[in-house]
Each structure stands twice: as C-alpha cells, then as structure tokens.
Image (tube, rainbow, N blue to C red; front, side):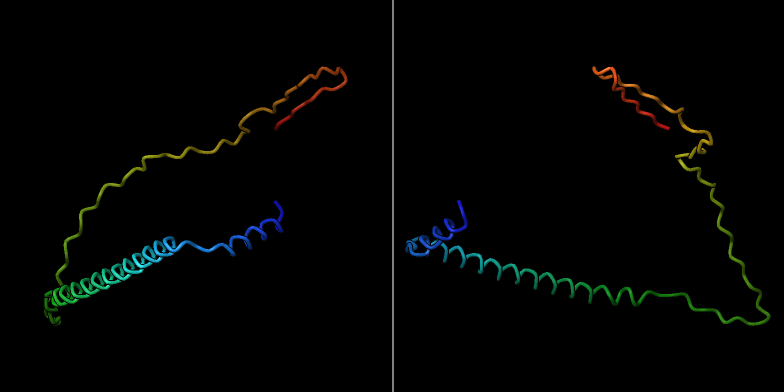
Length: 127
C-alpha cells in the first residue's frame, strides 16, 4: 500500500457515519473516567490534609524536649572529665585483596589454522 492508498482509505472512513450507540458508549466511558479522576483528586486532598494535621500535632512534642540546664563555669569549680568510650576491636574486611602479579599472566599463544588450500594458512598470535 502506498501513502495515496492510505489517504484514500481515510477519506472514505471520514465520510462514513458513526453509529449512535457507539457515540453513546464512548460518552459514557469518558464520563466515568472524568468522574473517577475527580474522586482521585479528592482522595489526595484528604491525604495531604491528614499529613498536615499529623505534622502539627507532632511538631510541639519535638520542640518541647527538655534539655539539661547548662552549668555556669566558675574558676574554682574543677572540670569534670567524661569517661572514654571503650575502644572497639578493629574489624577485618571479609574480602582480602591479593597483590597484582608483576609477571605476565600467560605466555604468547600461536594458533595455526590450515585451510583446504595448501597455499593459505591462518595464524592467530596473541600476546
């Protein structure tokens, strides 16, 4: 089919009348979709409002945490040293890396492929 044939088919389809029951079904489904989208938006508005309310209720509790009053330091009061935390043993990694080889990994390879023609020989050499 060429582009002209396709254009002719589209012109013929444009001239055909669409059945009324098909239009009614399309309009009903479109109305259902529009209605369901409105419900979806209302649900998101309710979720956002609930989260905002929860944040307002939780915020004062986090802001009102009691902190220890700071002691005024006087020259005659000795400084109190806090106890040192116990040192934890060093952890060895589960995977130990090996040193790289300094010598080449393999020797050069020579592959000789003989063909049915005695004058043609294929040599593959790698280093």
